[in-house]
Length: 508
Image 1 (cartoon, rainbow, N blue to C red):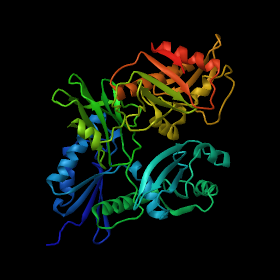
Image 2 (cartoon, rainbow, N blue to C red; image 1 turned 180 degrees about the horizontal axis):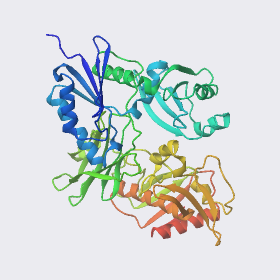
Image 3 (spheres, rainbow, N blue to C red; image 1 turned 30 degrees about the vertical axis):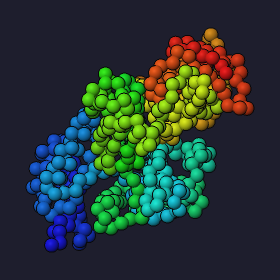
Image 4 (cartoon, helix red, strand yellow; image 1 turned 60 degrees about the vertical axis):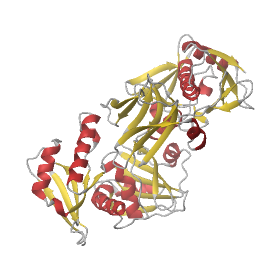
């Protein structure tokens, strides 16, 4: 017997709901005067849904309420969990689709831009109403687009120099433009379009106007009722980190494409506890501990730790016991080194470093937790505890004013008068002659010496080493790639940085 469920129900808040019949293609909107849109009580919202529609006619239900609307991330997570259970108990497919996650698909669904697998598309959504330009970079996969990164640009000068400043290495095959809201100026849209030769410009609508239709197209695609070749993955709504002993094992930024699954192999210490910590984009939000997993029940020497985040931004951590044969034959080694390391060496170029572990018989790269050999020398101050490497480099694409890079160059000069238009930070000179870096952080502007910032990079390197070989090192060797000759200023800053973290530095 054919299903009688032919409705997609959308919950914006307790006072605004919509219903779409995908057999008749007709909409019905429900607006409840007097209801407080800030009322986020799940049971009251469910009661309102029951009074509004017939649950046995609904095939899918979409909640668009932002996590940032709740007092804390735990409150948001518990609300979404209740919504999921409500849908399951009524035989309804659950979706969590906040408006910001739909901007790229909203544009692509209208622009219908197609490129070859492995090529990039850039979407641009200017807004005079919000005085910003929103951009999203998408990578073409076999039959969909994967979200890569996004930027919010506050400068509306709209010149060639403006474009060069924020694109910085982005080389899309095609560009698609559409206004963010129906109130945005057509003039600004045309100004942006004039900078991209051959761009596809959607003039008849905007993201906000098209939001509901885009949600329906997305839901029908996921359910398999109507496949869209322009589908775009939803991005993660929270920054999620798995810690062990205050060291991050797995880090997922809130711009990551969903669903995702990342794993790392660890040496088991039954006295340790894994922590799952998440934080959202709200400035008032603080990192929140969602789960603590003691390793007391793990009887093997090694274990596989896996972080999974589904398309509805529900996360969970799994710990799997593994034996030696499994490590060697079935699982990626990631950052685990399988021999006794006696010495470690950090080899720097101008923008990255690689870590080598060795003994008398063998030398091997100590990889990062995600399996990378190189670590970009980037530091991002997006939280109280800074983030490093590729994660920080990804942050630079969205918030350059909170990221420090070019650190090897900064540690090699004595003149603080130099500048680079790509820098979101400033250089200042102290009376004692030392160079200071002023950068924005979550707690306001911070001034740090270059040797202090270099010490943070070295400390991060020591964490990679500890995760890879299972022990701390009292001495590290510092080397440089062929063709790079460090000056005495750089060497002195390495020595001073080592003193700050109480580690001996030896140049090789």
